[in-house]
Amino acid sequence: MKKQIIDMLQESILLCAERGLLPLADFRGTIDLENTKDSAFGDYASNLAMVLASVAKDKPRKIAETLIAQLQDRDGILEKVEIAGPGFINFFVRDRIWAALLADIHRLGEGYGQSDFGTGKRVQVEFVSANPTGPLHIGHARGAVIGDVVANILTAAGFDVLKEYYINDVGKQMNTLGRSVLLRYREICGRTIEFPADHYQGDYIADLAREILQKEGEVFLDKEEKEILGYFTKYAADSIMDGIKADLASFGVTFDNYFSERDLYKDNGVLGLLDRLKSKDVVYQEGDTLWFRTTAFGDEKDRVVIRETGEPTYFAADIAYHKNKFERGFDAVVDIWGADHHGYIPRVKAAIAAVGNDPEALKIILVQLVSLLRGGKPVAMSTRAGEFVTLREVVDEVGKDAARYNFLMRRSDSHLDFDLELAKKQSNENPVYYVQYAHARICSIARMAAEKGLKLPMLEEVDLSLLTVPEELQLIKTITRYPEIVEQSARLLEPHRFTFYLNDLAAIFHSYYNKNKVVSEELDLSRARLFLMLCIGTVLRNALHILGVQAPEKM
RNA sequence: GGGCGAUUAGCUCAGUGGAUAGAGCACUGGCCUCCGAAGCCAGGUGUCCCGGGUUCAAAUCCCGGAUCGCCCUCCA
Image (tube, rainbow, N blue to C red; front, side, top):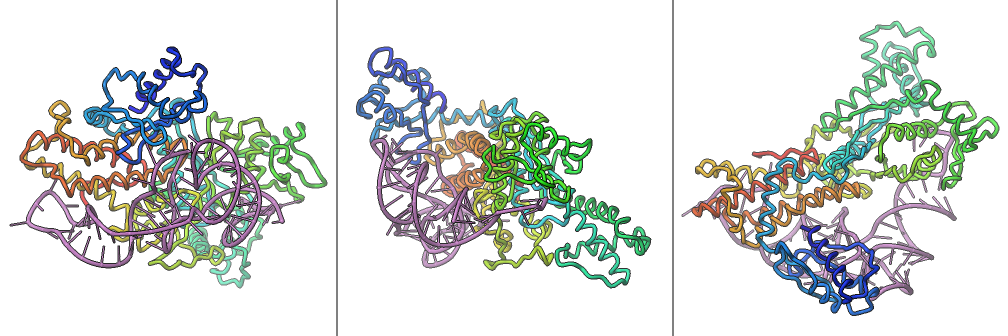
């Protein structure tokens, strides 16, 4: 629809130029057609005449007049075209054209909203990637949902998507984890220990120690730390990782691939890469440390890749990891990070450029912190003391649907207050129910209609021209706009657009429902309205599916 | 001190260079004999932080300032 009108404008420009009506022979700009906010301005509006004013050296309203005179509406889709305000061209589409679009929604069903926007392109989305040193907490939950939904959106937009979790299982924190469990193990066995403040304090550490004791007995008790630390570390990391996977699954988040940092070091992977970069002078030695010349690629200072101690930094592995991503042939790579990591962006982009890839192909979504509230009051959390609300606890308390939906109600890079009491409430304060209720209502209407012997109508039995109530047209226009939402969210990587759209659609539906009877004595009208309701249900279901939220038939 | 981001209704926040800047919550009053009241309807608010600039047009782009947050580890 939109494209048709844009094409008409394009043709009009050509005709005007050819016929010498406007000096636009070398106009190369793109034509912008926007959805109007107010129906008084029609369905679509173009600012073309105003844009052309400086090129054509004439008044916008006059240019608009000339353009409109040359419009070729061969299919007769337009009711009228008006010039308004400073020179907007407002397009009014015929009602019957809108109604006919419902047929597409019905025909496509689950596939409605999918596009070929990203067809043929492979994208990797990497998210969560929390260290396997403790259970996921509320802070990880937001990133998990955003990553999962972004992947769903990209898939709907036609991209071939791979969801990946990077397991950061190398480095100091892993030894700290193993030692924490080992110390608790000794403690449980009755030894006196001194538990360092910078070790992991949570109860789950002692639980792991107890598990090991139960499985293996006291065989480790009198062994040297260096002999047995490896076992404790691996046991703890594997067990915690299993827990993380289970918690994510209960949250509806799954991955296609888990990528271990340890694997990067195999076959001299990280060190070999640094050697090769050294020969290109991207990496240089200074004393005992090895530096990456990120300043040559726009970073504010160079970064250490091998410490004085001889250990590689996290960044060293990340260079190899991002190189590996591009070697796997992805056209674009999406990383989802906590917003406190924003200072890390120039470094990684520099690394990508240094190894010969396009830094623009890396898209980073920054996710702001979540403030957890209960009844409006902040919930105290301290990672150091091991006191945090886990993802599992949140899912158990408020449910998967409410939790996911609430995390998607703000822009990713905007602070989010998550109120446990509010998310649990089954009331108008809780937006997820508002949308789900709309879907359940539609299902209820369909059930009731079936009881009355009104079968779900086939397209050929429906006279869509009977849909003439203003709210009906508004509903039709809103659901025909859905593919734009998918594409736009995919382009901008902004999943929150879905919750705003769903809320709008549900509001129009609820309002319509209260004013109009779908199933009535008038059989033809009932069929047409039921058909519209089913199309709305399809859109609600498709959109909720992308968010990973249930579309219940009853509530 | 440097960097990044934010600042929009009482609160929490949307907003693609366009026309009269929106939503939810909160507050007040109304609506079930009638397809589900987890719903609807009616009520009203803005120095879009401030000051310049670009533009036919700026909440939106640019520059300067204020305030707040985050980052400025050979942590991850």
